[in-house]
Image (cartoon, rainbow, N blue to C red):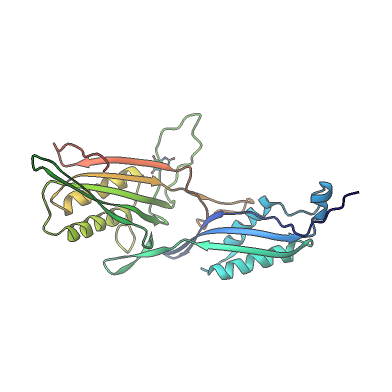
Amino acid sequence: MASYALPLHHHGKSKVRLGRVWRDGNVHHMVEWDVYTMIDSDMEHAFLNGDNTGMTATDTQKNTVYVIAQRMAQKCTIEQYAIALAQHFVRTYPLVSKAKIYVEQKPWTRVQQTGAPHDHGFALQGTELRTVYVTYDKAGTLDVTAGLKDLSLLKTTQSGYEGFLRDQFTVLPEVNDRIMASTVTCTWKYSAPPPCYDAAYAAAKQGLLDAFLGPARGGVYSPSVQYTLYNMAKNILDRVPQSESIFLNMPNLHFIPCNPVGSTFNNDVYVATSEPHGNIEAVITRQGIAPHCKL
Ligand SMILES: O=c1[nH]c(=O)c2[nH]c(=O)[nH]c2[nH]1
């Protein structure tokens, strides 16, 4: 008769993605975390007999990740949060002997707008790349298209989405306060060389930031990604006189209001998502100029 051992077992939820916003008046703090839970528990009977009695389901663990995040009343570190979560599991469930919590924090950093910290605007530190695409032909035609990709921007308020078509397939609520987040790809084609490519790049990037975030105090309201995208492109045309055509791609990275166990959502805890995401794209040119293609 063969005999078996079960030297290791544990179960948890991986990659529970959350955004947490703490509102201190008009000044907002925000973090985005990927949380992994794993618990050791006296659950041999589940493996051996198919008996789930007393098991803390991984779905319950996922909900707990959000609820404990909501209970962190003050802006906290991942260490403080992970300790609170681990203690909750061990102290709440008699069969749980150990909780193992791993948290990764995204490098969202408050944007400085003309030297002042923005109330509610954040950028992912150091993720954007500066790009250029040059063509030159036998006729001597030189085309320079500069740009950037992977500029991740987020604001915790001053964004809404209302008035869109509703039919039997529409469930999205209309909101006038939501998180807006995107990873911006932008290219601008030059009609002539600017006096300084570095200065033109800096002006273009600042134009994008100004239209997305607005001033450090109060920001600027966005009724849609579409409207904000158009204003971002206009800023480049206005501030970089040698630019003639702007391509912008902006995924709408959804942070979904979260109330996992019917607790009230208070603009505090969000399910962070990257897929599926909206995708908004346009080319904006000076009047009469042919649009350039993406590159
Ligand atoms: O700014 C937005 N534009 C959309 O086209 C859209 N679609 C959607 O579901 N949410 C949003 N938000």
